[in-house]
Image 1 (tube, rainbow, N blue to C red):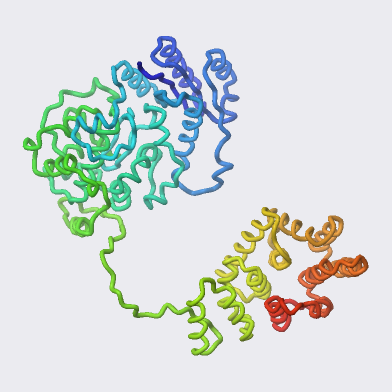
Image 2 (image 1 turned 60 degrees about the vertical axis):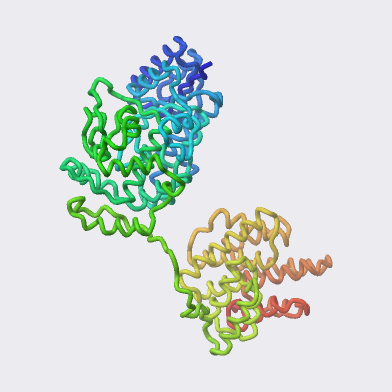
Length: 598
């Protein structure tokens, strides 16, 4: 029993004529029983441009899927993957409503009619999309990892620009198209631009075929397209071992995982053997292989399958090498370039007959061994102390799993100057130590931090405070470093972000009523001269109602927001014997002018 076939029409409504033609054709195919369902997947707002189209879709029982545009999710991210993500998102939403065991014919609203007709024609075959495992056995390519369950039908893959197919229309079982869908940032894998046509197909093979990623990282294939056309047309057949191995893998993947459709069969002539490896880089074999400035097009599965299955003893030595690697493949065949292959690639850049252009990218060399001597000390530079103290502090840091307390204790005991303090406090601050973040913020407001430390402490401040706000946590030190961020941005005449306003409100409300909180916020942002009056009243009130903890916290808040010495005089006697670190941080801040402003 043949599986159901569903068409997924994806895209914007750019041309009403194209949309109507595509839907008319698919509706006739559905009526004839060649397909069983149609899904129209587009963006919200698209069908409103042509109201008559949506009504026709509904009246003809076509499922409509509308997706909210993705720009609000990705923001201003700069990646070539965005164009692919738009297409992939619409296809994913269509697949979500299609039976999971169906064949899905992915097409689009424009320019896809020829490919769609060819795919519909394929469906008449007894087995239009064979099992990959069966094809592997038939072609003698058993070692190739099976990424798909069944072959995917697609058109016009290219050499040089590997995995670039036509993406107007393709067809596969739902489970296999789901393997093709991804939302990865391709530049993170390949360190270079890939277009949408490639990203539909290549990412599924990156994990099981590491050589694919290595090829994209090392070879500037755009440069080689005309160079290899010239070289192979003139009889050149010497290739670096890495390129021969890559093409053994790439052509093997195409032969096993894809059914290569022929877009214009009337343009192709009779195919004769042998088919040499070099033929894949120029027009040959009655246009079954057709040169293009974007890479040579493979226009039929006939030429690909004939190449793979032809007798090895009937072809040239270079072709023999490629075919033998394909048929004798093991797990190493699919791995990255070896050190020897990298050396040969470097040497081949001087082969002017092969190419005079710069075609080898600056890929990393593979390390085989390292010298084992420890020749240069990794000891951190602690400023403002003696060499002996540096050595002792470095040793103490090396002996503990977390250096935060060691550094904070040393910093207080040795009265490190403000300009040298970031070297002792920034590590603890980045690790989320509230006292370290607080002192770094006080140093920032007094211009003791460089550009890097400034950016990092503002980032840490926001990250830690946001987590505390979201998880209903935080203490007075967190509250005070949030206050310092507000005061710093005011000092720099910068806008207060909405998230910081939420943090400021949340932490203040832990220690005062909503009414008082609103008064304090209004005073901070508009009337700072009123802060002392507000806090004096609240501090007096906390004594009257016998709330010693609130009393203490209000004094700390008043000191942080106003910098008035009178609040330090109130706070200093309140430290307990167990608050050595907190007392030390406050005393340091007062003694070095980080906290008292009057």
